[in-house]
Image (tube, rainbow, N blue to C red):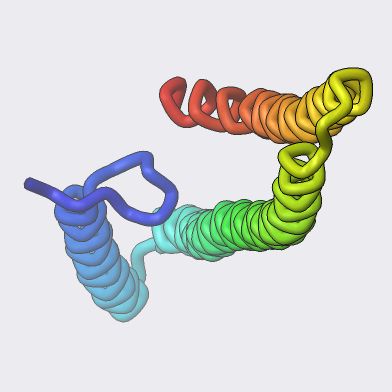
Length: 193
């Protein structure tokens, strides 16, 4: 498969063939000029008017100017091609940097969630131990009203603990949903490429 040149307009092999053809044309033009000069010199020595020589010199000058313009055009195309490649590279580097930054932020958020979970687990264990200690006092109590009151307190403490856990779960779900939105956008944009 032929590789495309930096400008993307022609394959490299075609461009190389074009340059070789142009080189051959220049060589042939040079030969014609030499032959015409020799012919003009011969005519001058023979006493004939060298009209064609003057016209050919003007044509040669025009040809030199056009070749210079072609060379300038090739140089400009090469520069535009390299500038375009550099721009594309810069965009890729910026996208990679943004993706790295996003991953770092996600990692920091994950670590913060993990620390929050650990802190909540430790606090939950402490509250659970307090609740369990109160059961022992309820077992020792013989008055039904006190037992009823302790049971209601224990139930309220258990409900408060489960409410805190539910709140924590909801917070994590909301955080994940908010992170899921940008991830879906990135995935959609990558599918379009």
